[in-house]
Every structure is written in C-alpha cells, then in structure tokens.
Amino acid sequence: MNGSTWKLFDRLSADYDEVVPFFASFGAAIMATIDPPPGTRLLDLGAGRGALTAPALARGCHVTAIDAAPGMVRRLAATYPDAEVHTMDAQALTLADNSFDVVASAFVIHLLDDPAAGVAEAYRVLKPGGRFAFTGASERSKGGPTVSAPDELGVRLNELFAEFTAYLPPNGSIGTWNDAADMLEDAGFVDLREDFAEVAIPFDDAEALWRWSLTHGYRAFIDDLPDARRAEFHDRMLALQAKDFVLRRVNPVWSGRKPPPRKTV
Ligand SMILES: C[S@@+](CC[C@H](N)C(=O)[O-])C[C@H]1O[C@@H](n2cnc3c(N)ncnc32)[C@H](O)[C@@H]1O
Image 1 (tube, rainbow, N blue to C red):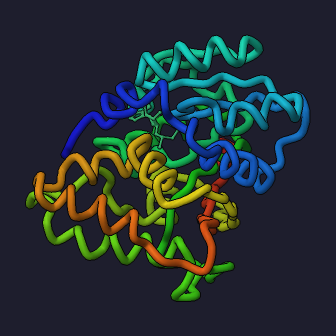
Image 2: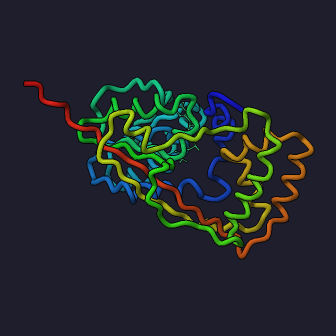
Image 3: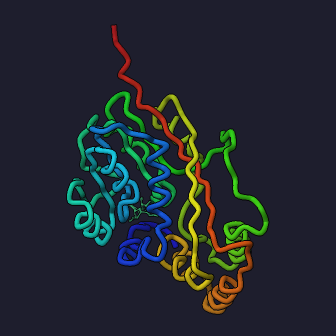
C-alpha cells in the first residue's frame, strides 16, 4: 500500500486505540519528554484520537490539533472541545508562519507521502526559538533503553512481522524509513535532542493482540498479505508464546529548535 495513509486511519477511526490505550499511553510518555509549560501554544500534527492533545491540554497548553482523516477529526473535536481542531494535510498546513511554541507529532511523519514536507511545515509554523518533536529513529542515536529479551512479547511480535514481510507485494506496506536527525537538520533545525518514551501495555490474551493489530498501522500490513498468508499470520499471532502478555516498547523522540532569524548588518 502506498500514498495517502490517512484514508486507512479514517476507516479505522472508530476503533483506533480502543482495544488497549497503546497510543494514548505513548502520547503521555512523549509529552513528558517534551515537557511544555502551561500557556504553551502547541500544534499536534497528525493528532489521531488525541494521544498528544490530551496530555498537552492537561498541562495547560493551548492546543491546535490537525489530522487529514475527517473521522479522526470529528472524534477529536467531540472529545476535546478545548482544542482548536482542523482537518488538514500535515504537508500543506493552512496555518500562519511563526505561530507555535511547540509542534509535536507522534507516529505520523514516517507515514506521509513526503515526510520532508511535513518537517518543513513544522518549521514554518514554529516561532523562532520554538521546538519540533516527533517520533523517529536516526543513525546518530546514542542509544537508549531497549527491550531485547527474546521471550518479550514485543520481540516475538517483531519476529513474526519480519518473517511475513517476505510475502508483501513489491512496494511493501505503509511507512518509509527516514533519518530523523538528518530531516531536522535539512529543514534548518538546530540544538537536536534525542529523548526516549516507553510504554508497557498489558493485553488480556493473544486474541486481544490480534484485535488491536487490526486497528492501526499494522492493519495495512495484514491487509496487504495474500489471503492464505493472512490466515497463517492470524494463526501464528494467536499461537505466540512470550513470558507475559505485556507489550513493552521504547521509541526515540527527536527534536530540534527553530533558530532566531540571522541579524543582517
Ligand atoms: C499512527 S496514527 C497517529 C495518531 C496520533 N498522533 C497518535 O499518536 O495516536 C497516524 C495519524 O496520521 C494521520 N495522517 C496521515 N497522513 C496525514 C497527512 N498527510 N496529514 C495529516 N495527518 C495525516 C492519520 O490520519 C492518523 O490519524
């Protein structure tokens, strides 16, 4: 599957983050790394059901939340009347230059057709001195906490996805790898930082893990498998063995600051 991934999330908007609060938990952990003070003007870029919007409002930020999926935006507006909510493309924001203290984006930039355009738009709408923070990895990572024991649920799940990647069509599934630190510097950001957000999400059983997998980006991978392989993938997920049914994940949060304009003499 390629292009305009918001259409998938629009279809999933009623069920997204309903099986377990995976993204809401990650959003809270990501917002803790950004740590904006009350009164911060914050843009949640690709807000989904409000995983970042909720903790930002709770901290007293003035939140604008945008998403390209109308279904997500309807639910956002109903759940968070204190936020300013818009249906909008993260790659072509109809928002003024220099208007936010913080732009934050969780699990979105790698899904855009043109990730660099999303980063450039974050730069444009930030005030000089403002910070853009988003989930993404970089070759320049100094390393952080990891979840690597072979009997961890997350490790077993990754192994299963890696094995079935071979059966995807040639273009693969959604998401593209882009180096987070390179993208920030290419857009003009300075003072780069890498922080880490982690979650531990308990599942009742493998059936709940399967239902959860159908409600977010994993869904594209599952839909893109040939029918027979999809049935096999389902059976293999239901048979997963792990030390417990807690999904432990750690994600890098890269951020950079928009510098003040250079003085011309
Ligand atoms: C994995 S979800 C993340 C949502 C939310 N940030 C969270 O952490 O739960 C990706 C979101 O990006 C949105 N999205 C995809 N392409 C977009 C685009 N071009 N502009 C704005 N939002 C987009 C989707 O509609 C979806 O809500």
